Amino acid sequence: MSLAWVRYTSCSGCQLMLTNCEAQLAELAMQVELREFDLISSACAEKGRVDLALVEGSVSTPTELDSLLDLRARSRWLVAIGACALTGGINALAGGAERPEPGTFPPQPLRRFVRVDWEIPGCPPERSELLSLFGALRHGGWPARLECAVCMECRIAENRCLLMEDRLPCLGPVTRAGCRARCPGVGVACEGCRGEVAEAHRDEVFRLLAGCGLPSREVRRRLGRFRGNGHD
Amino acid sequence: MPWPAFPSIALQPDEVGRLFSALASGRLMFGPRPGSDGSCRLQPLPEIPAHPGAAQPFLSLKKFLVPDGDPLWAWTSERYAGPPPPPRLTVVDLPLCDLQALAWLDLVFAEDPPYRARREALLVVGAPCQPAADCFCDPAGLLPGGDLFRAGTRWWALSPVGEALLVRAAGPGNLAGEPLPGPEPGGAVPTVDPARFAGSAGDPLWDEAAARCLACGACSAVCPTCMCYEVVDDPRLDGTVTRRRVWDNCFFPEHARVAGGHDFRPGRGRRLRFRFEHKYLGFGPWRGLSSCVGCGRCRRACPVGISLEEVAGRLARGAGP
Ligand code: SF4
Ligand code: SF4
Ligand code: SF4
Ligand code: SF4
Image 1 (cartoon, rainbow over the protein chains, first blue to last red):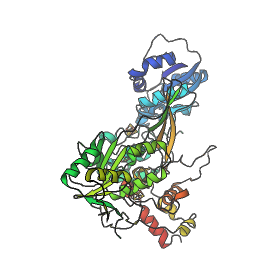
Image 2 (cartoon, rainbow over the protein chains, first blue to last red; image 1 turned 90 degrees about the horizontal axis):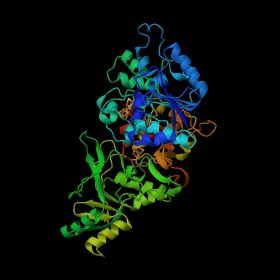
Image 3 (cartoon, chains in turn orange, cyan; image 1 turned 60 degrees about the vertical axis):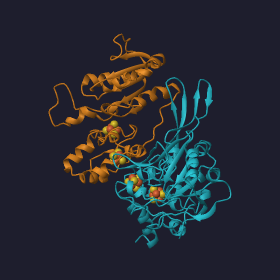
């Protein structure tokens, strides 16, 4: 399986999550043929056809957009990795408050421009999810995924509920699970980095967060942070 | 209404000593203990506490018997392997609601080999609890499961395994039937009229009850008798595949969605009604058997304060316009 990891507007944190899987890197190197992966190797081959394109970051310049369109055309599967690629993520937080830098436009998620075959959410994504993508593709499918909210994993972990007990503005009830409630597990309210669940009950969560003492404007910002910028 | 009677005996200190070593030998011990955050969980114990003191843990025995992510089998280098042998556990000081919930799990997983293996490696000892203001166990409900029960110096055998342990500690022939010293329940598990329930499908009651529901799944995750699971394959880079059972939940959008995209239970109202039906009326061979043991966990865990008992009350009073 030939692999290209391409990064647009992002912090490289997603790539680091993969390169941090030290125990699995040798096996990974045997399974995939690295074509483009700046963080791992500068000796990358010509930009030809690849089986798997992993794309980190949002699109915020015309050059990035051209590159993404070209990448889509020459890859069999294109997978969006991390919050920036899925919703604009951290880059989109400026939210049009300031004028964009010359030659840039507000950060956009990949699926605004190209077909995305699979998504791995998170800021940063879970190592286990990155690895299970390779595992599943090796067997000819996509990883299994249970669509539910972070609260489910938080209850399974028997954490104290920060929202109910401490009135902290936890986004667990509307955030896609998969991180095993990483943040509430250490006493920090979920920021929603994995994006919004399907069928999110926005009104009710708005009320719950406002009940934590947050002004409405702050609640809206908090809820919108990893929801994308309304283009999808 | 008193709690049911089981074979019972008062043990002498040396007999208790023998019983404790039988319960502890080659086993990990767990019991409900408050954590530093004030929440009570089943936690490892260095030894069996001399004095019984039951408390309701956040998650019941289902976290040991049907653990989330439990491997069912693994495929490794051209070979299938069953799950590793389950740990041998003794869990002490469980309240009666959790023993009733155990009886329910024993019933529905009676023919499930991974469950059976875990259950056979488990010894469960109950004790009388202090009921909370918001729980309402029912002595007339499910016959408590588990193996032993203790209060003061008196012990009860809840299963043949438990009886054998008592006989081994105290000698044969001394056990006599005695009701369990359960708590006076503060309320009652609602009874639901099946005909009224069946006629309520189009009633706005369900959507109204679920209007605030986040579909977070907390109620069912903490319920000791909710046992929906999904089976997923976990393929690894090195070629091994592990098939796992992970906790599923009838509030999740995928729960009743089938190939082609049709959803048999769209919307939170329909899903709440489904959970309600399963709890109070049962499905399949267990129709008519309520699996709510009145532990109160679901109401306590719900971020928006939805309570199935209140919904049952509304249904009984006659809902609708
Ligand atoms: S702490 Fe947050 S994620 Fe955990 S149960 Fe409460 S609301 Fe849900
Ligand atoms: S708990 Fe929330 S913020 Fe933390 S990693 Fe999970 S989804 Fe992201
Ligand atoms: S439905 Fe609620 S009260 Fe009844 S057993 Fe389940 S968690 Fe306990
Ligand atoms: S805990 Fe409450 S909000 Fe969450 S799914 Fe259950 S009823 Fe709905």
